[in-house]
Amino acid sequence: MESRPDYLVVRTPANPAYHWGNCLILDQAPEPGSVASWVEAFRREHPTAEHVALGIDATEVAIDPAEAASAGVALEQDVVLVTDQLDSAPVPDGFSLRELDPADPEQWAALVGMELEDLDEPDRTESHADFLTRRFAGHRALAEAGHGGWFAAYAPDGRPVASLGIFATGADRWRYQQVITHPDFRRRGIAGALLRAAGARACASGARELVIVADLTGPAIGLYRCAGFRDAVPQWALYAPPA
Image (cartoon, rainbow, N blue to C red; front, side, top):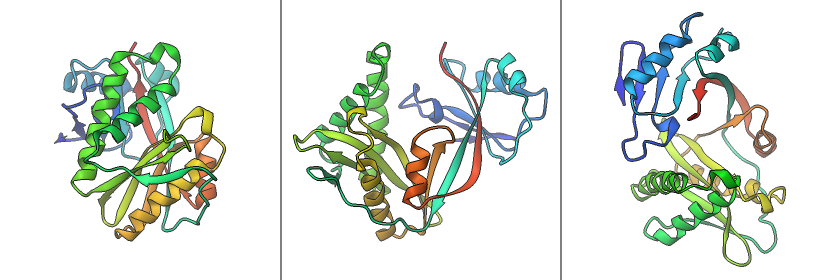
């Protein structure tokens, strides 16, 4: 990370295809009429990137979506949810939950395969597999260094069907990462049980606040609210995927 006068540059050299690991975080909401200049700033800082990712460290923005579109990006809003405790939930019959062993590469490689199965056929590319492999290598390194852990739910046949991570961010706050459930195993209570198991592990390690981020219009936010999370603040971004 590199500080600039009014933004932060985030780079992940080990995984250049990780969009939100290679981004700018703006100190405040862009002024009207400035979106194009911020896109230019991103291009200067990340000249080889095929995407644009601008996080905004503000809870209120006054960006015209039409202005964003004319600059080639979309204004996105998620919501940050927090809780200091989660209620309990049973593990569905036949399934098991466990924390991955950072020393076992096969466990982590299996999660890459599970995520690739969740993609539409055109996205099952070698480059995306490489991106996931690199991303999980980063997660695995964090777990190995003792900053948190990665959890998976396993079907009766032993294959992983859901996973997520949770890591310390400082000030007794832990954040969830990359929650995913295989499409064939959704709406069975698996993700909810996994969410709670990881949260219990974090609280046992000293967490006083658990944080998760969700799409306002996606199905996951209902799961998080039912588990005990409450809406805290909005999270804004300007984003464009590769052409």
